[in-house]
Every structure is written in structure tokens, then in C-alpha cells.
Length: 417
Image (cartoon, rainbow, N blue to C red; front, side, top):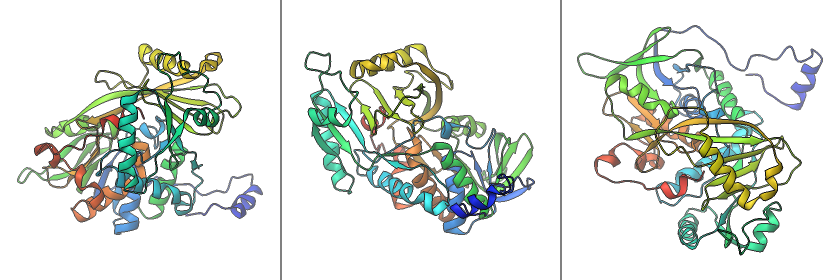
């Protein structure tokens, strides 16, 4: 793998940057692999990387029906955080933040990682009570949540001129999560792909999985049928974000998840005005400013199940109206683009990283805002595939919790981001 540095940049300048080696190969598709990973998004690519790096499993193929990094890894609002409520969730996301902090150096790729902190704007007392509980839980796992008063909130977020004493929801205080960050989403996909390829993993774009295949005599998974033919494998991992059920339904496997559309939009670029991630959980909107100056804005998901990838007008209007309550000056900004991404959400709003009842078949699904979990999701799924036993961080995330009603209820901390 060609290393990126100031010296390689200067050296390639002499050839007008025509001599760079390809970031990853396009090898011929083989008939059999030890592991097939369906989905070349953040979680699929990180799983492939950690399988090769940590467990020495390199006979791996990542299958992507479109182009690498063109799915939900490119359809998010790039927020990284660990401000969760449950004892089962917080250590996992703390680990993910920790891994993110070292990825640029480990993968030799500029991820444009920026530790900005997140400020939750609190506007109701029920939310304040809930968020204080979260603060005490997080403190047990060295994840920080600190209260700041309204004057300090406005000082840190200069455009925040709404939410006064006479408004519909006056600002009570703010809660700061210093570990929160943002990161370049496509760079995450590209860097994991490049590093996995260097370790021997194969990445196959434009390879759509049509259905899973099982052995007739024992029901074990044995491969997949694709638009390029049948590919055999000892183990198969389904890591396809909002389309998990589209794959598992092909063999009659029912999972406790439903698919929803989550939308976001960006404004025209403006000069730097916000250097933190702003979350407004009481009114359902969140925003940050990108390195290019765009305001990246998101709101609540569609109320009904959907596989759509565009935006519903009333969902967009609700998010904009909520934002303008707190940031009235933003009404002068022009909208530049908007998009939607399909999420599959488990009934308790906690992800599923698990073996299934079908031997050799694994799933990573139910990620509500899965971008923040990309490194830890891949790290732990790779451990599960390699050892056939869950990593301690994901033991509570197995499908078994639904049989015993042992839910990990995170709905109150995930729906706003």
C-alpha cells in the first residue's frame, strides 16, 4: 500500500499526480471465500479490515450492489458521540469514539476528524431530568456530560438568538458532551477499503446479492446468488443498513426490525458561525457546520415504514420550523441539497450484532445513526465472525434479547441524532 505523506505528495507533484497507485484493486471474482460480507458501507468495510488485521482472515470478499461508499455511509450527518443512557450501550460507543480518534494514523488517511463537542439545548424539565440521568450513567464509563447555563450556551453558539423567556419552549440550560466529533464520511469508507485491500481482502462493486443460499441437508448458510453468479462461502455477514430484511427474507429469516427513512439537508456555504454540534431534542432538530461552510441539518425520521431515499415535504418543513425557532437568522439561507437514507431499527432502538439461528449467518443491523459506530461495529462483528462468540461489548446486542424480552431501551437517546 502506498503511504500518504508530505513527501509522497511532493514526489507525485512532478508527474502531475498521475503516478499514484490505485487505492484498492478490482480482482476477478472467485467461486469460494471463507467469509462473504454483503455491503461495502462503513460497517462492512471495517468488519473486513478487522477480520484481516486482528484475526488473520484474509480470504474475504465484500460485495456491494452499487459503488463503494454510495449507501448510508454517504447519507448521514457525520456526528460521532457516546452520550447514551444504558450500561450496555455506553461502553460500546466509548470504544467507537476511542477507535475513531486513532483511525487517521492507523489507516494512513486524512479522515478530517474534528473533535468539536456537542451541545444539547434543553427546553423542557422532563428532558432535563432524563438528560441528567444520562449524565450520571455516562460518568461511570468516563464519558462526559456537563451542564452549562443559558448564557454560556448562547456564548458558545452565537447564532442562537431564539428560545427566549417568551418563546414556545424557552431554553433552560445546555448539556455539553466534549468527546463528540465530526468526520469526513466518504473518507471513512475509502480508508477502510484501502487498508482492507492491502491486507488481501477483495472488494467487488456492482455485485448485487439476489438471495442467500442454504445447504439442503443441514440448513447451514453456504453462499449467495448474485447478478454475477453463485458465490460459495463458509460464513456470510449481512451488513446492508436499511435493507437487511430484503436479504434475510430470501431464506425466510424474520428479524425484529423495521425500515424507516431519515432525511437531512444542507444550506449554501457561509462563513464559520458554529464550531460545535448542536442538538435540540425537545423540538427534534440538530445541526453542525461542515468544513466547506454548509449547515448540515437533520430532524426526525418519517413516521411510517419506508425504503424511500428522498425527503417528505412535511418532515422537511417540521425540521426547518423547529430550527428557525432557535435560529431565526437562518431563514435567509438557501437550501442547497437534501437526501434521505433508509435505516432498519430494532424494536428497542438498540443495534443487533449477532449470530442467527442459521449456522454461518451473521447480521449487523438496527443502527440508528450508525456512522458513529463504524469502527466499533466492525471491530466487534469481526470478533464474532472469527470466534463464533460475541465480543463482550456486543454481548447484550444479540438476537437472544428478544426471546427473553431483555431489551436495551435506547429510544430516548437515539431518535434525535
